Length: 222
Image 1 (cartoon, rainbow, N blue to C red):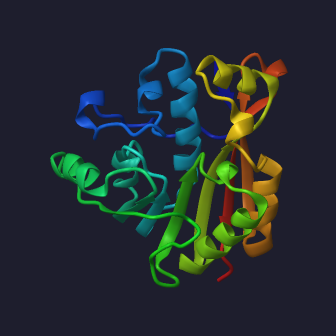
Image 2 (tube, helix red, strand yellow; image 1 turned 90 degrees about the vertical axis):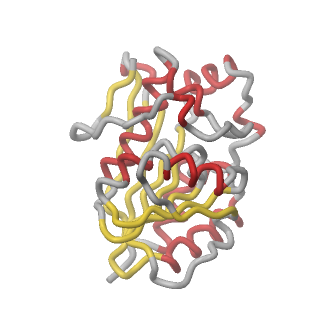
């Protein structure tokens, strides 16, 4: 259903659904397993994962159930996570059973509880569009602060095409009530703090529906 406009992305390594922690209301875990829509949900994450360069530490803001963790463990020595709603102890224990240690806490991107220049990568999948303009500015400052010189931020945000709005409405979700920043707003705010590496877009199939998701890759000056 959806085509990607970059090199082949890594496949998202999902556990059986029952192996994850109990879902929060904001966690779209069930959608990853749907036969058609699930392909789009997995594809947007795979686009983000393809941009993650690897290193010692990564911070995922909005980690939810931890669907990225198996893939990230192949690239990073330490996986850290920050989430407003997820239960860090429960998620940690679920992955410990899989032989994977994680470092998770509750909190938000406006006040990241880590020291300066700590991470090689900060990853945010479908997070920044929920912020209002002033919050978006503060978030980009915090992300820049905790990145090492030369470190990267990789984010994914939906593109509000009619198809995307319609699909969300089918799920009972009015994105106008939850999305306060567009893909252009996010890219502009990131560019004020960081150097742009590239923007990657995921297009619908057929392509006449246009882009449905956008991944930004920015880097902190070394």
